Length: 82
Image 1 (cartoon, rainbow, N blue to C red):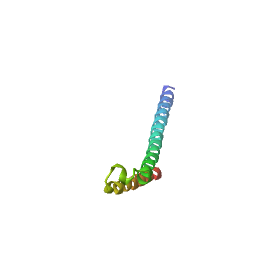
Image 2 (image 1 turned 180 degrees about the horizontal axis):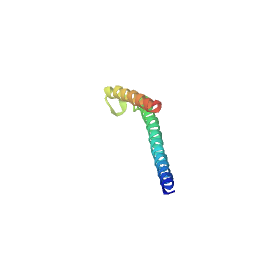
Image 3 (image 1 turned 60 degrees about the vertical axis):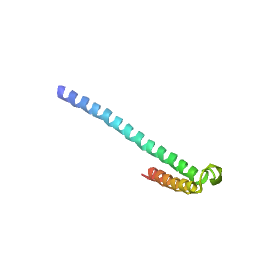
Image 4 (image 1 turned 90 degrees about the vertical axis):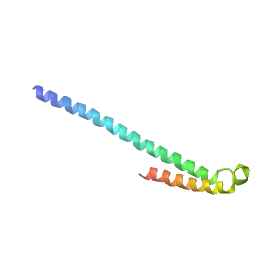
């Protein structure tokens, strides 16, 4: 009779551990999606709303901002897909 009780307690503990692992995996999944959205928004900002060339930066910085914006957008899309 004690063996059945021990098995049931072990199964209950295993169930609680598996639920905890599932919650952690779910949170990691949601955080990667949120990071993807933030990277996409940052990339769009750098591509379209980056300060104009004549305001305070050299001409080459404009191209750098656009390239970095494209890279951030691609990485963000990859985070959303995966």
